[in-house]
Length: 176
Picture 1 (spheres, rainbow, N blue to C red):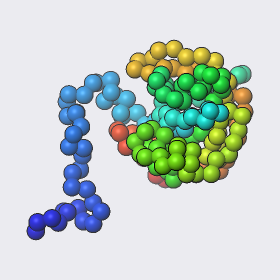
Picture 2 (picture 1 turned 180 degrees about the vertical axis):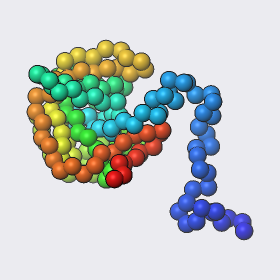
Picture 3 (picture 1 turned 90 degrees about the horizontal axis):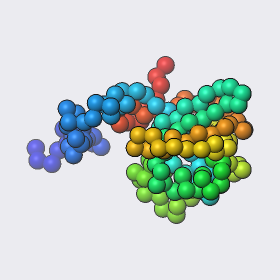
């Protein structure tokens, strides 16, 4: 049958990206990183500017701290460096399109902040729910990115709706 998708309506013809670098040719470090599940977070600034970040670490202490690896050439970094503060919000399974938009993988008609309702904070707009307001402590080159360090100055904890994770190039959620 010509033109019939064997995976059914709305299915995929290919089970993998036909243009992806073959796994055997990928960097072993990149393959290791791909096997580590990472939280998908949205980092924003008062600019406003924002960026999806899946390399985020939160450390409790006095003071509590946050670390993330961001693109040094991103609009987010330029605005965070200027403002000296930023917000970090963990995303949920319902935020997949939001994550793709702020990662530059999906169109943003009207701008990055035009489509959702945003909660304005002194650290940057957040989509609501759980977020942390951070003072920028500094940054340094780190691998292909920039390791950004911040001190957590404010935290709002919303309902636990389950995290959005990034694993092996795809979004995942926790089952169970």
